[in-house]
Length: 481
Ligand SMILES: Nc1ncnc2c1ncn2[C@@H]1O[C@H](COP(=O)(O)OP(=O)(O)OP(=O)(O)O)[C@@H](O)[C@H]1O
Ligand SMILES: [Mg+2]
Image 1: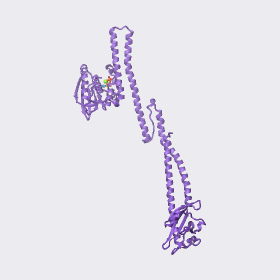
Image 2: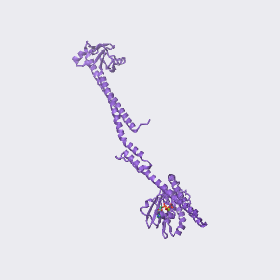
Image 3: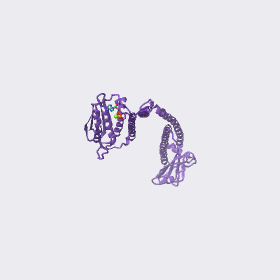
Image 4: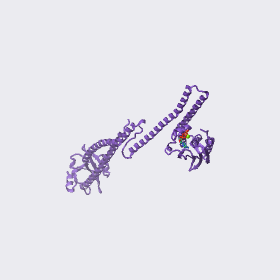
């Protein structure tokens, strides 16, 4: 059976209170009874001493007239009315008894009597009259010349103590039960008050679904445990909202990007089928269809890369690779393209550096950056590449004198399917996935990618990847994407 936190808190509270009250009560009773006993013992011991002193006359004769206790009270001032006094001779026979005993005797055990005969003072609690116990001390009376002449026994009733204890037990018992009752109610109420915000949070959190992720848990109160819980949940919902939005956006963009080439192909094929196209016209249609197919496979391939990067982020297969060698290879690939476009492509510095990375993916990052730089730079412009070391990282800079990126577009260029100038880039074949792939890859290597740009002047893309401790296992540099 599982109890609610409120019930558990109340039970804990009540159990602890019960245990403390019971322990306190028992200790109180124990200490009180000890104090009472010690006091009684000292009183009966002093009465026994005084009695012994009064009834023995030197050289050791016992002076025990009837009603000797009344004489003791009158002449010695001992309050014998409150005590039972009994005198035994060395043979153990009762030779004198106070009037308070009224023909009864104090039933002292054999062991106690035997110890008293040996000269020991012994205390014992007995029940001579059935109901209330009596505390008895047996004091041996020893005279120098004669040895043991008597054993004086003095008893005091423990009736008062018993009565006090009896009433106190009632008061305590009732007090404990009442306190537990009150504590349960107060505990329940307090637990409910303390946990009410949690119920509130649960109610609000339950209302928030995938469709209402813009809602937040509105708990007004101090920044305590509950406040922090609400804030944490709100932050989590905000992250979920962002992810949901990104997924929606991504799915929408991906479908749109895939639909466009399909629509173009459908249109061209339909037009061709309607008329009576010549062989050349058919060839043109097929070439255009092929172009669209290429574009679609490019999109699908990149989408796959991104999907895989999402899954493999944690387990990116990394080996120690020579960054400069991969850069050299990719650079060579673009030489001809740059010449054809009339863009000057230079590698200013290519410092030999090793990083822990997947060589194919690293090659793809370099490829995408140089591809963009050439693509977005007009003929006559310049693209400069530089690889150097800084503060334990390899820094790759790809700088161009191209069209640049407007300030308002800069934060989004690494988003999937984001293109600054949609019309122009479509003409050139861009779909807006290159930079998001770069970002995914670089971050999976523990690095960063940034951009600085000024419209009309050019852009600088900076990749920063932590250097590896070269263990000699240089990986394959991979093939171009
Ligand atoms: N070097 C650059 N100069 C100016 N604008 C750039 C540069 N690199 C990227 N951009 C802008 O950022 C956008 C996103 O770049 P990204 O590489 O992700 O996509 P793309 O080049 O359009 O398409 P893809 O790389 O998928 O073929 C581009 O559309 C372009 O507008
Ligand atoms: Mg690109």
